[in-house]
Amino acid sequence: MKENRPGYESTPPAENRPQEGKTYFFQSFIIIVISIAALLGFRQVLPSKIFTETGITKNVVVDSLMLEAVEADGGETEKDTLSSNKKIVFEAVNGIKFPAETFEDYKGYQHLVNFYEKLLQLETKKQGKVRIAYFGDSMTDGDLIVKDFRASLQERFGGEGVGFVNITSESAPSRSTLTHQFSPNWKTQSYLNVKSPRSPFGVNGHVFFTKRDTVNPAWVRYKASNIRHLTELYNPTLFYGKSGNRKAAVDVIIGKDTIRKNLNPVNLVNTLSVANGGIKGFKANFIASDSIPFYGFNFDDGRGVHVDNFSNRGNSGLPIGSFNTNVMRAFNDKLGYDLIVLHYGTNVLNYGSLNYTWYEKRMARVVEHLRECFPGVDILIISTADKSTKYGLEMKTDSAVVPLSRAQKKYAVQTESAYVNLYTLMGGDGSMVKWVDEEAPALANKDYTHFNFRGAKKVSDLIWNQINGGYEQYKRLRGFKTPTPPAPAPQTGTPVTEQPKAEQPKTPTVQPAKKPIVKKDTITPKKDTTHAP
Image 1 (cartoon, rainbow, N blue to C red):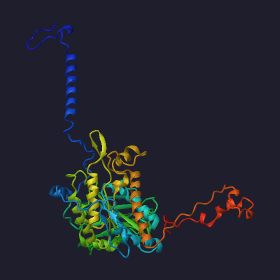
Image 2 (tube, helix red, strand yellow):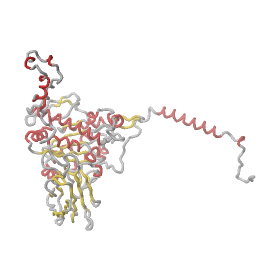
Image 3 (tube, rainbow, N blue to C red):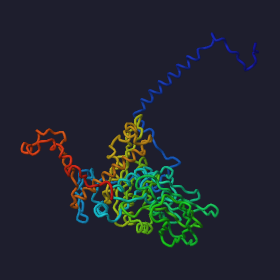
Image 4 (cartoon, helix red, strand yellow):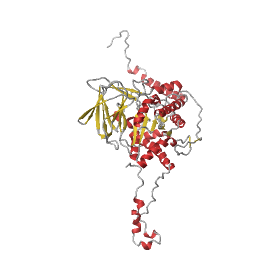
């Protein structure tokens, strides 16, 4: 038996204990009922958008210029002077004038006339070459969208090679269009977060420096893929900048052979040919090369179409305005761009209010700066894609998508640039939910923002189809007739009695029914607009 010590209370028999369990149950039940009633009562005053589906992770850098712009003039407003029904009339370029458009349906093919003419020369005369700089954010990370866009162009107009590739890249492990490896002793500066780099940024928005290491020199390695048009590294060429270092060299290792090539960094942009023609892969060791700014390697066969993917996670597009004009012109002298694509929006959504006047104005200045950097280049603006966010308990198109895409169209019109409304091409309101939840297999990821490789291919096709539609219209304006498909051949099983009576005496057998099979117009294919010779 337990003693009755001070501070100690003996436990009463069970039959004498209060019904604590039942009491706690009823108390909990009442609390739950009150909570539900409170939630229903406050629902009208709570924001409909409770949780955003995506956020900034440690692997995503949001460019500092955009954050500054939002803080400085994110609330700026301006009267909208562009009516949806007002006609946009174009001025002729080289005698070509596209029909007027409304703002609502604006595509701006007129502003691609120079680009279209270069494609026409490739298609009809097999002359010249075309180069495209495709600037984007995480949507084009790992060469997504761009690789399929590049393939469509090269399949039709010719060209071999993946184009310009950085020295290092955060997306290298996920890139399928080539194998890209590099040592850890590289110092990278990006226009997303560095305002005053040691040397000007390259056309890719980066500049790379080797870290001093006499034992383990910095290196890069590239290997071609097995994808059509990318099966070799064509004419690999190193691009690097100006420096007082006159002792640097690059050891190029191809198979079992090593060739030392000296660097001569005397110009704003310099090049070093690694090999002529196509090779499967190589490794480059950088010897005593500290203080020299490096940019990347270019791979192309010098003909047809080439598309460079300049993707940066977290980019709004505004950092392009920090390009050094003289350095960009030096890049352009060597690469020769005909079209610049600006594919942004993912990182601009959900910053500030739904008023994107600040972005419209600043991106307009970016476009004008690009025209200073790359004289004569055509510009194509691709809008934000659809993005879904949770409102209450349902995923819906984010309320910022339409205002942002409209701002992007406005600065496209104002800067005389072409425009692709990716949001509407996807299907408009609610399309991202369909791409994620209703398509089988799915076309986008569960963040309801980014496409998977299947969705990226579809997006590329949507963009290509619109651009190609403008090109076919351009050819008609230039007087080139688009081949029409031949009339369908008569059915081989058509009874002889259905033939005209005048012909029946001449064809008493079944041959008239077979004759259409060998008619020239039924077996001659249309003009090949898919494969380059």
